[in-house]
Length: 429
Image 1 (cartoon, rainbow, N blue to C red):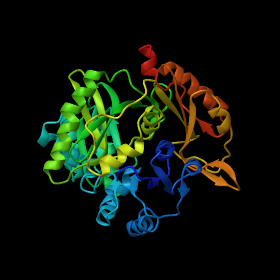
Image 2 (cartoon, rainbow, N blue to C red):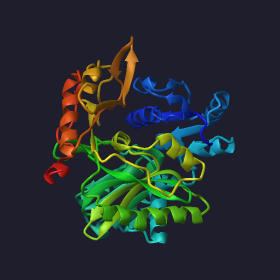
Image 3 (cartoon, helix red, strand yellow):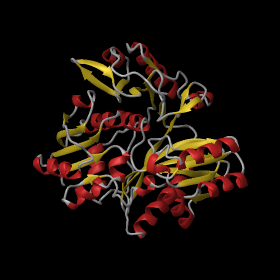
């Protein structure tokens, strides 16, 4: 693509996409940024498009009409549905994997089989399409044990069962249709013990470079209690991911995966997100995602020093430099503000204010995740609604700034965890 200025279409509407839009807008190579469907925060950086992203033909037509040079796909569902294939077939450059390569997230069983074939460290497992056989396997292995719906289930298809009864209940829920088609097959695996971390890498199908690590908080309430969520906060870099562990993750997990996918004739282009368990024996793969994490993307973008658009273009074009992207040394942290009741039922349409006051705090940026405009006023329109993010000289300073930002938000119906980065605090970071 050279150095010409580019028209870019960003697909998605969450906090992850707001962070990507914010960072893409800083590129001197950006001509125009469009977003479909976007949100009120994203519209500060992009032109909103009322596109049905499930209608691939409509997306292709839009890209041709607006002379789009690059499509950046934020969420996983369009990738698993094959949007990258439709764009590529039409000669449109896209950052995101093909449908076949997106099976790394679209099918947990596919990933486990690939790990077994390539010798990638992960928990022992079995795949099931029969409930009786799955129950018998749970009884044979004993608890704790992990039950996963094979397909994508918006982060809700995984149960870490502490007892056999919980495991049986999870198996029954999958086969009873609790997760739709995603639960038609079930993966049951041993429960790994250690500390979780999120690791990211960018690949052009052959070359792969690390894109940093983060640590998020899945439980809804302080002390890692309550139900699992899509993520209540994150920070980077996590102290647990030492340089040695980052190198091992690339050598033992990421590079073998990229090589295996290329050998299968389904090269992986895009961002590969490895959910890791750091065990006594080293990093083990819990699962792959084929997009930036949310809220991990927010802290990665806060720290990214190089031109994001250049990086994504290079990966999409198959000419990624072997030199890893550069990050600022300053840590970043984000606190998710969610609607009361999330991840269960919650109200929509409640008014939100104070974003400008929050962003007046040094180092703070508020990314909008589940917001909408009603009569010109900002309101909550989802479960996870705001990502109050901050940088600082230390994780502790970034955390203090982020919570000062939270205190400035005016939203009576919102709540957040007050202990984001508690592991780092225990380490004195």
